[in-house]
Length: 508
Image 1 (cartoon, rainbow, N blue to C red):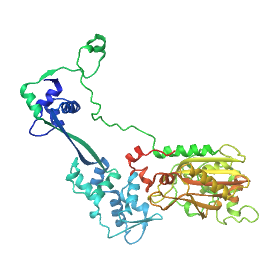
Image 2: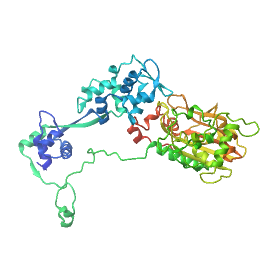
Image 3: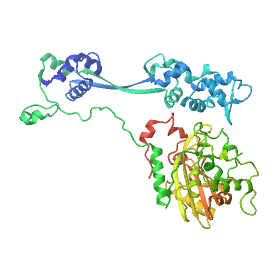
Image 4: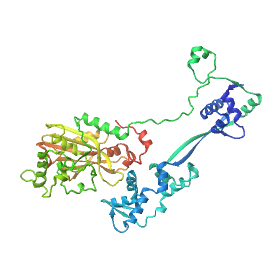
């Protein structure tokens, strides 16, 4: 019997009494594992060996997981700092506790997102409390990190950690699972007979080379068979994030509805973010707990003086014969303070005032799909950064019916036809209402946006003398309705599921 050299080597190294792994055969024959695998499948087709497969799953801590195993989980460190600050008796400033904990950067967000979930305490309005009965020593995730830190890699069957804890650590990016296909080879009776009779080695060629072609030797050589069913290394290529894909889809829909896109700065003056929206300067949403102010620079230099005067007058005195304003102090220096925008309505005020692209004549429609920043408490529907779908229409004699019809047309493009509306209060719109959609999995109503008709107190200082209807919609919550996500942290952030991002396709 004649066989290629690599097949002969595998036959001679394998055993009829016990199964031998491909790795062991590769070491014994000095052949690459992939060559041994190919030879084993070819021998199996000839009835000379039996190839058995099994999948072994192992787990190992990531670098971040090892850091937390050594230093402690961020939420545990936050709890310890809160206890030291006396938060078990009275609420303590969150900034003070975070500073004492030594946490920085992404660790702060991670600590805040897991603190209440694990029952270590509560965070409310910038203050933190600590539960004195919470026991970090009973923290299943922390204990699991300690166990896994003692091993470089461990078979999952040999680890006494419950599946829920392992899943949570994996979602947090603190451990990695890996699956390895183990193949074992055993000689058949026929192979033993052939080996006893003697097997000759025949030379085969694995690939066509330029030399074979130019010399003409390809006519005489024997080519090795190519196994198209052999395993190949899986390579994950990059792709556009599902959130970005959906944002582009939203833009396509709005452009198709006749809208033009707005652009503007992420860092802007409070004047454009809030004052032009007729938001009083003592409004709770304008405190340092709800906004991200800049340390350097702190203020904007240039603001249109005439517009500043008109906006200040609207705040103090109101607009029109029946206008009263807020009768509260208005500080231009406060209006010049720089911050990360909490909504993209700052773009709308820039455009409506004529400062961005010049005066806009009705009818006009504009939109943006951009990131905004809010100092919210992290939960399944809130993030510190998220994307807002901003839009407005300027025309004569607009009504709430026009606004509701616009939403129905927009959301219908994404297969969402059950939009509900609820009256609401905004300082800058009247009438106002919130939008809700039904979550496809839980059946619960999810708030997806806010809207209304801009008030005269906002439009008159901007120089607009016709109706403007406007809205701010959440892009992430649109994805929740489209795909059934129950936690927006599943699609971006430190806990996102990479397999989900790779496999979910945008609905068109």
